[in-house]
Amino acid sequence: MEAALGKEHPPGQPLLHGIHRSPYYDSLLGKLITRGDNRQEAIGKMQEALAGFVIRGVDTTIPFHQRILENSDYRAGKINTKWIEDVLLPQIQVT
Image 1: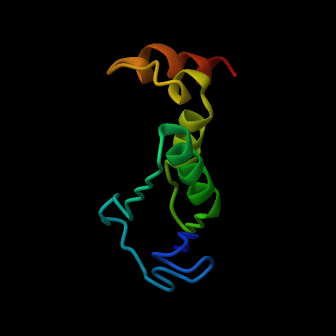
Image 2: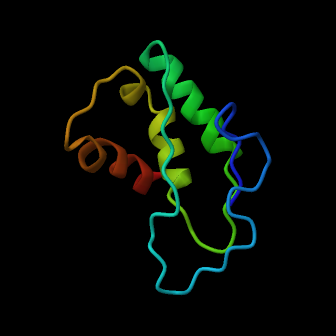
């Protein structure tokens, strides 16, 4: 797993290079947290960080999270606890 995380972790430097995971691994391989002066800045930093993540050998939810961050409703904060189920998933299933 590699991450481009700026000051906390130098870009391109392996985070867990060469680690072997068994088929019974904990599915939480990492947690990414970003912060900004406002919502848009934090979302932009998250998009940049996710674009720099490289995880090989297992499927990840990175593309799903990228899709969320690209959505105009999400970017505007027009979401609720059923937003993924009611709005995002139907859009994904159609496309």
